[in-house]
Amino acid sequence: MIENIKENKDFQMLNHLEKCVNTKVKSFLSGEFIQNYGGRKKIIGIIIEGNADLKKVDMKGNETILEHLSKGDIFSEMFIDDFEDPVTLVATKKTDVLFIDYLSILRDCKINCHYHTFVVNHIMDMMMKKAVQLNQKIAILSNRTTREKILAYLKNEAEGQKKVSIPYSLQELADYLCVDRSAMMREIKKLIEEKKIKKNGRTFTIYKRH
Picture (cartoon, rainbow, N blue to C red):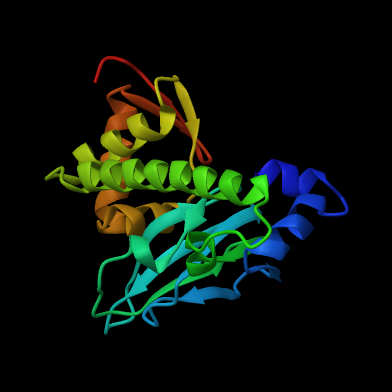
């Protein structure tokens, strides 16, 4: 659906969707807040173009990156448990977002169009994928040591490939893994020295011997 909406310059499908589903497309610049969590709004968002980070900030101002979103990813407060600390979704570059009113999807289509059924089925598939991604992160963070978290994250991102380019800076990666940046850097250095990984900027080469 995302590709269809983006590639169709006159947004023909979106125009059809607007007849039976409450939708809105908004653009955000880098650093802008896309959504603040906590209001329990029944809204589903889909990244049409760009990137965004879902962040939690504690009382001391420490940030934890809960998730990195890119083109085609879905987000909603329905995927987030109650947090004592504020949770926000922030654009990391110019980002276009399609917002869909969740309740309008559940209602019967007034004009009985096939787009409505298509959207419901597609969003259900995306929600299933989201559940898998959240379980993967839980598995990564369940590792006890920083070293184990790094290797688990890289293997998960690589999806069986030898090389993987990650979307995070080193500080952002430490925030995502919920570890100290200095400790993480020491472990990465050790892994490089042991020839278990190779690093070139944000691209990592993973060797099978670990």
